[in-house]
Every structure is written in structure tokens, then in C-alpha cells.
Length: 69
Image (cartoon, rainbow, N blue to C red; front, side, top):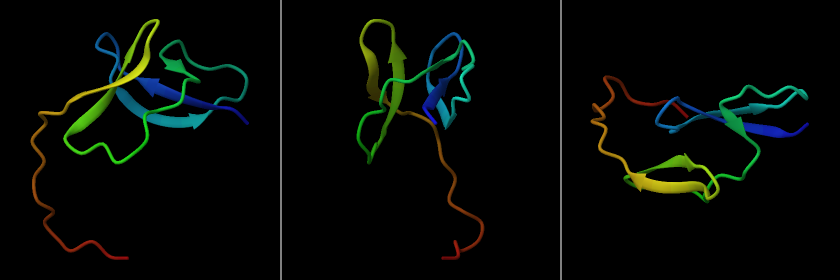
């Protein structure tokens, strides 16, 4: 199956990736994402350019509990 990378509207920031199933939603693209890690950056889809990394200013709170492996 093909993978569709979904983005928000209207600003077109990456949300998630999912299988295409032959009928992708209008807010998705098969264009490959930039290679990870995205340290302090986040992908934004730009028409006719594909994915570009932009500065990520979101505040992230420290986890309230330890992550388990």
C-alpha cells in the first residue's frame, strides 16, 4: 500500500502518516517527508516544493511519568 502524509488546513503542517487505500483525503500527499530527527523543526507542505522544515515553537511540557520501554 502507498503511504499518504496528512497535513492541517490551511497552514499545511504535518499531522500523521497512514495507508492510502486508493482514495487519499484532499489534505494529504504521497511526497516523502524530510529525514528525521526534526530537532526544533516541523514539516510543512508547500505547494510545488513538497515538505520543508520550519521552526517549531510549540511548548512541550515535561512528561508527568517515566516512559516505559
